[in-house]
Amino acid sequence: MAVGKTALGTLASENDNALQMAKPVALILFGSPGSGKGTQSKYLVEWLKIPQISTGDMLREHIRQGDTIGQAIQARMAAGSLVSDELVNQLVFERINQPDAQRGFILDGYPRTPAQAEEMMRLLAARGAGEVVIHLVVDYNVIISRMSGRRVCPKCGTLYNAISRPPKVDGICDLDGESLVIREDDREDVVRQRLEQYERQTQPLIEFFRKTSERLIEVDASHEKPEAVFERIKSGLQGFIGQ
Ligand SMILES: [Zn+2]
Image (tube, rainbow, N blue to C red; front, top):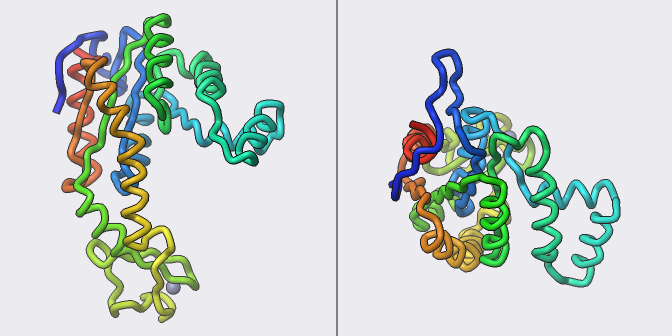
């Protein structure tokens, strides 16, 4: 469901499939574990031809390279503290100034706090970029039954799902007859815990954007296929950034 309407660009020419945008767009994607956020992000990258920027990936890359920033991150993590808003903001702002992000970008895992969100909105306004917030709303009971129905073969790694992809014989791998197991991450109590943690972290941000942004797209992502969810996101976006 799209709220409000702002036309910032014109539609693509006939031989260009990407949505044309007059202003750089910052897509901010929120979705719980199991909401299909990764898939929607990939669809958006392909459709809009803008990069996806993941703060988790950027932090890991600095740690891997062992540069000054990477060492600072590691020192904080070793001390049991979170990476500071200031550092994360700096990394994101450097990244979005690179040439491939001039038309826009998709933010994944950022902002994580209302303070980061406030700073980001200020910077986007200064750059003349407009934000669109996409919230994949899910029914937690659906996610829990979907994720807790997952089984994996410990021998060949094949994934099964009690609902969407059951093995031919209950509890047995089709390929090699091995007994299927539940991954630690898919245990119901672990899934519940992750959902609660997500909720605690994200709810204040959603509230922040409800108050400060007219461009919030909330889509039910728990009942339909990813392709259908993407169609809803597309029509919401066309209302905001296309014409
Ligand atoms: Zn197997």
